[in-house]
Image 1 (cartoon, rainbow, N blue to C red):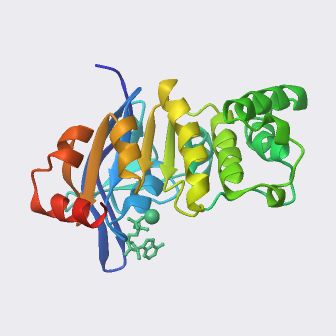
Image 2 (cartoon, rainbow, N blue to C red):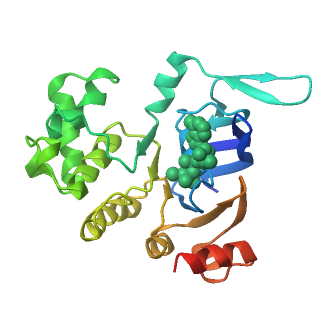
Length: 257
Ligand code: ADP
Ligand code: MG
């Protein structure tokens, strides 16, 4: 079995009285493509944000290549919480790439500057080297000819592909996609899914939150249905999407057909 790249153990996340994640044990192996599905407000984004260290778990831990991130603290009542230091966060965030529903490009920077930004400021690469790496990723998403354009001049689909190139440029071990096509006009969804599919064919390890169930069926190696803060049902795309065992999963799929 391939190595576990990213893992959570007993991950819980609360916002005040709301318990969003209630003990998630997830293992992501190299080359896996995991689709996460679930209703609005079920905690899909919160899970990805914990995996990208943008949220600190209320309990449990996140491990990258088998190493717990942050300093775990074991409490008398058995709970384990984690304290993240800013320096550790900066190191580990580079290894987990994230693409959001809103593309979050820097509006005052051109396409190539957007893709180079992390390489320059975080990885501190020389300009020429950063530019070369950025161009290679723009080629991958089919946007090399737009390198000098500003984001406002691009379609939503093109902006999202730039955001994908920007995340890839950091050469992360795993890519997280949070509903990457949800804010796009329908005619622009296909081009973004094609870029993601290309990455899948290259063997990129990824977690993808999506409502595009057809896409998930064809691209994912595993599908997880998140409900009530736990993995309600998980299995192959065929098992979860075509032959769900649990009533709740069936109801969700019926409402998204
Ligand atoms: P999903 O992505 O599945 O739609 P989210 O992870 O965004 O769900 O949100 C799950 C729940 O957590 C929702 O009830 C949401 O209102 C709540 N939530 C998310 N982020 C915060 C926050 N920063 N503060 C308070 N509540 C939050
Ligand atoms: Mg969300």
